[in-house]
Length: 222
Image (cartoon, rainbow, N blue to C red):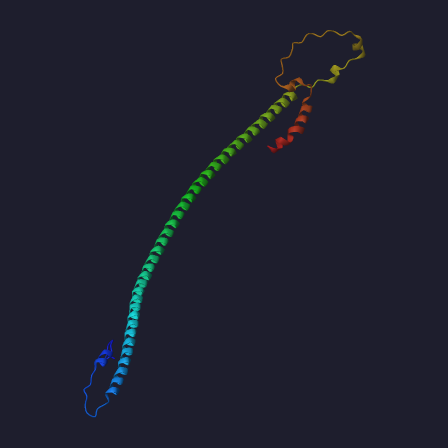
């Protein structure tokens, strides 16, 4: 066979004629051989045509597969490019989100720091004010205690300066008892005492003892 056909076809064998010659082959044998040869040639041609058809189908499949392979390559290449693009965009978006979150966190931290500093400054001012109030209160207490001690000392000095009266002047003899009481001359009323101690009938010694027992420990602390 040569190409896609056999060298001699069945139709050529069918149309083949031989000239008769003396003492040649028998015509019946030649015709029978040619018929068989024609049949075999026809079978061979059919098989060849079938093989060619199969080859064509396979060739079409190969070309289709090649086209599919090219399309698949293009699809894979496109998928790779799209994947790279998506990854790049995702990374850029992630970096943007991280940057925004960091910026917001820094702003919140700055705000908290400012509020914290302001609160500390306010607390320090309040503490300083309370210290001033406490110092003023302590001064007032100290001034009051000093004034109180000075007042009592002045009262004690006044009482100490008063003369002690003899109790015998208040005593009465039997003779005096029998004598009628003589009216005493009127004495001008004393001016109202400015201090309650002036109206109380205790001696300077008693006042000093009561003062020492109550306020002596406070004087020691000062």
